[in-house]
Length: 251
Image (tube, rainbow, N blue to C red; front, side):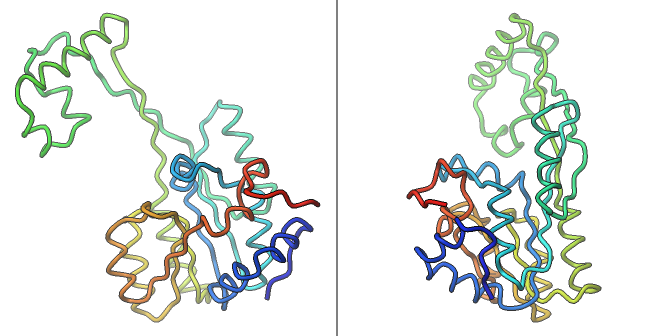
């Protein structure tokens, strides 16, 4: 059953009753949602709007079949914005899993290698592609790196904080020990194909919430088995930043 948590959500529900009806059918039994926010956040580039975690929590909480909303996001230690985001997520009532973001320094120092050597490039370009590049292309790329070296740049920073293991673990534990019957994953990452396949094969209801063309091709096999994919563009006004709403709703 749907009961709007805020007046704004109620007004939107009256404007878009079909969306509420759709989601009541999706959330028709005891449901857990799993939000890989590092995967969700970049969708804004494609969508042209951002997912507001506060409004998302209020919206999902409006469905009484939602048991838990789990959000996974790394913390960039020492970064005020990142640390505030984590505090905000906790205050909204999410079941939050976080860990420090790892910052890796990847060398781009080509001063000690031949101009046609792939030794540095192989850290950034997958081997099948690197093997097909002509020597002229490798030399060109190394020259670009050499120019960066002359400007004082000898490494790039790469941030890494992956929650695939934690999400897969929580999904299977919730299934085996907590009586969850409906699993809603907010991610288009193919790394989740195996745990979702197991759930579907065991008769559980499984949905992936994502945006068009941001779902791994591997999910196609699961759709044939019963996986439901829901395009979050349908619920934009319910979950986007308020200033990005497609219409003004008072209240």
